[in-house]
Structures are given as structure tokens and as C-alpha cells.
Picture (cartoon, helix red, strand yellow):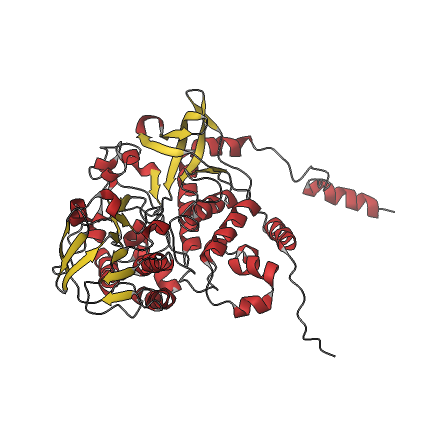
Length: 495
């Protein structure tokens, strides 16, 4: 008789045992094969990764699976890397729950495996979207089960390519004081804003700094209770900021939306396929620009759930076709002059995205002037102006930075930009959940090949010195010469 009753969840301990078994069956991680090196009496890491969020964890795991030692440095406290448990305000992720994310092709490393092991299949089938904080819990587990080395509380003060000796120097501020780390390659897994920062229109400068925030700021929304709030924008972060303000007791929230309508279709989702994921890197430049520019112009709509989270409040207003002309501070309130009239507000949240600007990050100053962006070498088609794309770094096949003038900044190619701004060169494989494993493995393969090429003389000498025999000489008996063999046979046949 069939028993349709579901077995109880096996628990995380059982899943972790499965992870260990799977990796053992696959003989992973591979044995370390990169020679240990030192410089100035200091050990040199093969790879240092800046950023311990999803991208940094995936990159570290992919490198270590390939036998390349890599370590992560993150300024946040342990378990609070990335935006998920800090500045992100959505209730759930927008990505479909079944996406495998940073699992690197290992079923037991997926979010689904982590979820079902604790809550069961029935709960998985009932789950709509992944709760944001639950995703953070999964990433914490991912780090723990793979024993990834993350140095928390390590703030990067400077990234210094040193071409003469083949390393990149990181100047760090740590809980134990100043520290210098040398690495042969450095990966910038610094997130959506990690190659610049939040973009705020110039009109914000006319307001007192305590009267506005960017949606990515660590704002205490409880302080907005009873106040009139304006939110500039209509994307996901705008909806999440508006909803958080409303739920914190704001007197009202006005969404100031320049467009006459909110985007309805996520064009990027419609373009997703293994063909694009693996093929974008190899497209001609004009096609790369055309695809990314079209998606930018169409814009990504806010998630339906995030929008409903706002509209369920009677004191939320969607002001469409509301272009902002100027803002002024009267000493008592903010007056926002728009094409729809004047809004009287107490606080403004700018959900206006991010800008790529190497010079805006003090840690990048040692090399910022030398980075070649797309705008430095590609002339885009007329009518397809796009500042984000022009500012995007022009990367090599392993996400490596390239110089504006060859040879002007030796060692620049040892720095790899593994964050969202790599999308124009590589496609969306370095900042979003759907294809992060593809990007991490591409990065790991590229760095591994470069490390091997740099050490090829050492590897050849190791090859020559290798002397472990597989055959010992006792497996056979040498035959006699042909003539002698015939004579012995004749003698044996004689009467």
C-alpha cells in the first residue's frame, strides 16, 4: 500500500553531512597547487576578495574548489555582510525561489536544499518568494558549511597594484589595528554600489543633510513617524523605502515619479537564457551595448508585492508624470516644485540608483585614473546615450581591469571587478542571483589559468622532479634475443 505521508524534515545536520559526502565524491576542493610565496617577509595570498556578500562567497568557494587559496575581507560584523540584513528593506526577494544562486552546481548547496531540510517539502511548495532575512540566514549557512575564510571588521583603506613585484597591496583597518595584505590577485566583490556610490541629484544639496537620505543609507525609519515623506523614484528600492516609512508611522508618503506610468514588464527576465548567460561575453561590442541599453531604457518594474505593500496604505500617493523642477528648504519644511505642483514635505528619500565613479572611493585612488571604461574606447550609436554604460569598466575575460594607456599602471590587470557594473562586458553573472555561479566559475577559471601561466617554470620543474613510480619492474620477465630463443627451443626438442 502506498503511504502518501511525507517524511519529517531531515534537518541541517543531515544536509551538512550530504554536502560533505557530495564534495568527497567529487574530490572537492581540489588539492592546493599554487606555490606558496612570500615578499618582504610577508606571505602572499594567491587571491584576496574584498566583500563577503553573495558574490564574494561564491567567488571564494569557486576558487577553493579549484585548489586556489582565497580569503575574504569584509568591513561588516560577521553575519551582516551585504545589504540583506542591513540596508535592504524588501519583505522578499524578487528572484524566483527555484533559482540555484551560488550553489556552483551542487544540489545540496542550494537554498531549496537548505529550506527543505528544515521545513519540509510541503512548506517549500507553499512558499511564494524567499523572505529577505531567510536568504541572509542561508548565506550565513553557506559560509559556515564550506568553511570559507572571512575576515570581518576589515575595512579596506587602499588597493595598490604593485606591478614591479607582481602583487596587489591592501591597506586595511582591522579590530587589531592597521594591517597590510599582499595578494597576487584581488577581486572586488563590492556589491551594487561598490565601484562608486549612491547617486543623488544635485538638488539634494539645497537641503539640510538631516532632511534627506538615499534609499541605500542606514536610515532609522522610526524617526520618520508622523512626518510627511517624499520618495523620488518608482523602482524596487523606492517601493521598499515608501512601505518602510508607512509601516513606521509616517503621516503620508508621496511617491514622486517622473514617468507617466510605472514600468510593467521586466525585460531582463525575458532575455534570460543559458545562451545569453554564456554568450554575452562573446558578442560584438555594439550588440552588448544595444541589449544592455534597451533593458536600461525600459527599466525594471518594482515587484508586485512591494508595490501592493505601499498601496494598501490610504496615506500613500502615487504621483505619476511628476517631474521635479527644484527643491528648497524654507527653514521649516521642504518645498518640492514639480510639474504637478508644489509638495510640502518634512523628509525626502532619493531612490535614484548608483553611479560608477572610481574616484568617489578613496580606496581606489591609487589606480582610479588608469581604469579604462567603455566610454574611453567605444563610440555608442547615436541616440543610445547611457551614462551607466559609458562609465562601466571595460573588463577582460577574467573580469580584470584594463588600463586606458597600456603600461601606465603595471599590475592593474591583477584587480578583478566581480560586481554588478561588470554586466556590460560579461552580462549579469556577477551581481544578481540567477547566474552568480556561472560568473564565479568564470572568474575562478580565469584567475587559475593566469596563476598557472605565471608559475609555469615552477610547475615544469615540479613535473620533472616527479618520481612516484606506478610500475616497479617486477611485472614481467625480459625475453631472450630471437636467435637464442630458437636455439633453446631446438635443443629442447632434440632426442
